Length: 253
Image 1 (cartoon, rainbow, N blue to C red):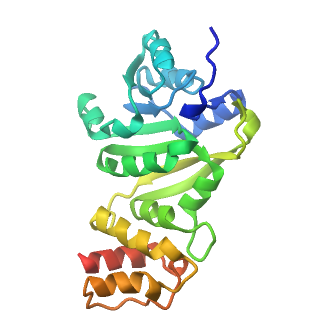
Image 2 (image 1 turned 180 degrees about the horizontal axis):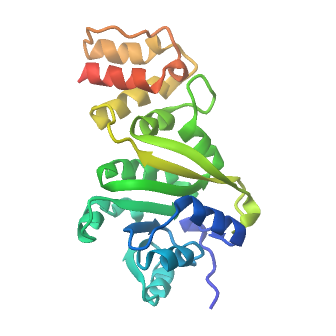
Image 3 (image 1 turned 30 degrees about the vertical axis):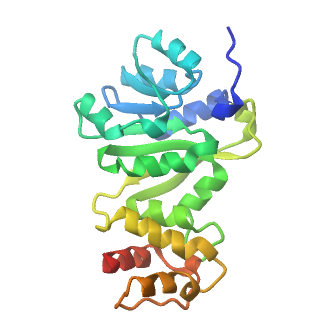
């Protein structure tokens, strides 16, 4: 029985075999590696991955799809909203310190998923995700560009990232209305020590009015915290490199 894509789950199923092969090559799965796939859907990517791995853990919210996936002998199915999955506990259950995470993420909640995974970064070896191209452009953006923002700073602090593959809409059924891409995210081995919640608050304040000079936003936030250090607030948020935001968060804590 054909599965009808559900709009509320943001379902667009990958169907282009050449793109699937390219994604698998980018992931480069090795037999026996612990891997978790988010949103396996109709198993277009799942099947070639599990053939190479031998076993694969999948996270699927759609009850009908989860039932189908359980019939596959080599899959461990977690039927859940991915935002409720404890990836640290998943790694522990698999008896490993870290897991590799892959998936075609639902575009309507891709940013919350990325921030959720950031909380479990210590238990993650690497991540390969299909996302809206516009989101990946923001993730990898350099300072002083239009795409550079909160997502760029929060993720670049913790990951080395690379846009590895462009994916056109016609690679999906049904085709989304946007271009897609695949990003590789490798957690930094020695990231700057900082309180994530503090950095997130600081960056959110900075980019709350990105066209204004930081003295109108971050400057007032620093004054309220009675910050005694020095930080150039005569810049706009998009002009400040990631390292400067991290150093400020360290100084504030």
